[in-house]
Image (tube, rainbow, N blue to C red; front, top):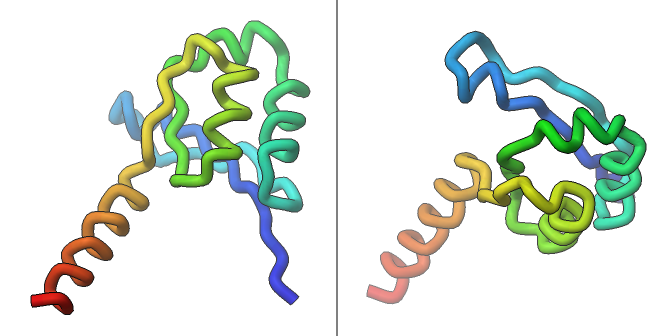
Length: 96
């Protein structure tokens, strides 16, 4: 059957143009609870230092981030922005 993992990546080096993204962890499952539990297990000073959280469109991740990282701005990650735009364009093309 299908199994999912939640992939947590540090995009700071990309944002600061100092290097590639860093894989922080891969956690079994894909749910609000999985991400919230992972975030809650991190040290408070680390969580307080997070300014932006890039997410896919899953609302469970956004809710977990809002609860555990209330001062961080949630944004959609570039891959999913392009994918959604491409899907919308493809749907429009098919209608026309």
